[in-house]
Length: 237
Image 1 (cartoon, rainbow, N blue to C red):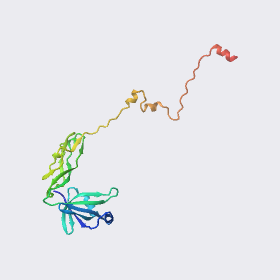
Image 2: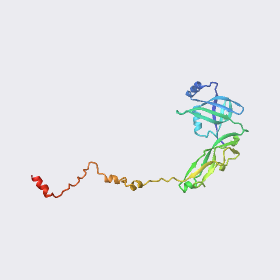
Image 3: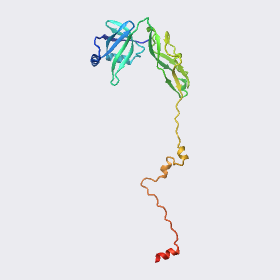
Image 4: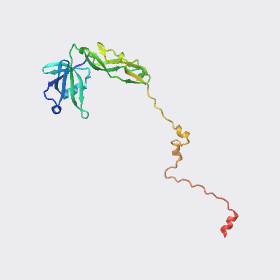
């Protein structure tokens, strides 16, 4: 069953960038509510209350009961716009839901357990899809979908068709992979074989062969040979 939370909202008559900026400076967040049979209506909600609410729910699958003009309106959050640079919420879209009308939404997928391939084979669980799109009545919205992954070994996967969601119609291809266990990566260490094969000194050998800094290289030995008699006579002249 979906989680239900409450939030106060106020109808606003001003629209446009200027009034919206003024609202944000005053701690309010511009919003809009729409749905089947309802004209889009501009709202404002408290920024602090909205921020705290979004920290503890899954916006896609949580029913938000808006206290609006003395009435309670059941809604889902369709979009949260955040500032690209500064922290803060720029705008929120609420979609009104009705008890007897099916709606389309996404709910989060939660993998349960430690896969066999992770526990005993050193693999890693890779979750490819984190939300599943469904069509369901508001009373049957699940807070999340749990998927048991304990039996997965390396190279094995679970797919959308393996998801069990009571009273809901899944809107995604059943063959899509939700999660898989991948083998551990093996780092290869390259040995300096190529340099040795070409006759180049291997690192370490070159350093050993080179003279230390400040050392004086030994002079080459002087060649001493016996003089010939003719050369001795020449020097005496």
